[in-house]
Length: 212
Image (tube, rainbow, N blue to C red; front, side, top):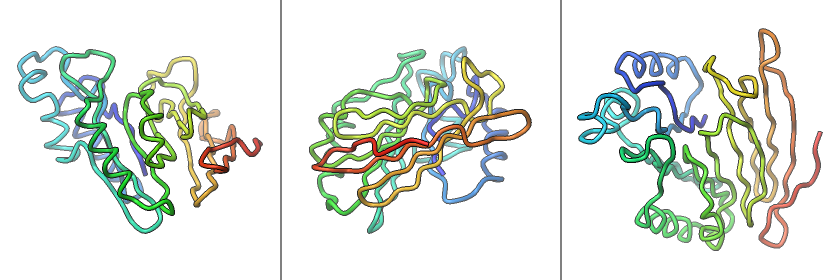
């Protein structure tokens, strides 16, 4: 289960504890990265001296987790920064580190990157076989073919502070050369499937195969 950031509203200890308690009720394994709301906004000292201190203490010590086996590789990249209030940033060192790890993996491994802020450096990572970028931040669910990778954008999963769309989450079914993406949206008291897209990899590019 992937959580692509913004576990809290104002990065307060109480909010992190509530998020931790909620995560403990959900299936494992879990893969979590921080978002810009997980950096303190009004506590200036904490924002610039220990911007992800609360996150590290209560949620996870590793802000760039990874999981790799013979079939799938999931790499996390932290885009939350002290000096950027809403947006995010990926450094050259982060890109180089991800690029090196992706290139070391074989072509038979499905390669997935997880960030909070979507970014458009996918063309650089495509040469190492990046298949999917999972991102949050925009509060809108989308499935976009970008260069030779697939961008799957998460909506707002549980917060009542939704925007133009209802609460939603995505379910991915991944095999080598084929990815199904199902979107589930809140309708009344429950989540129901609202869209399904199928993508196939042909000639080192992902292509939309069909929708239901």
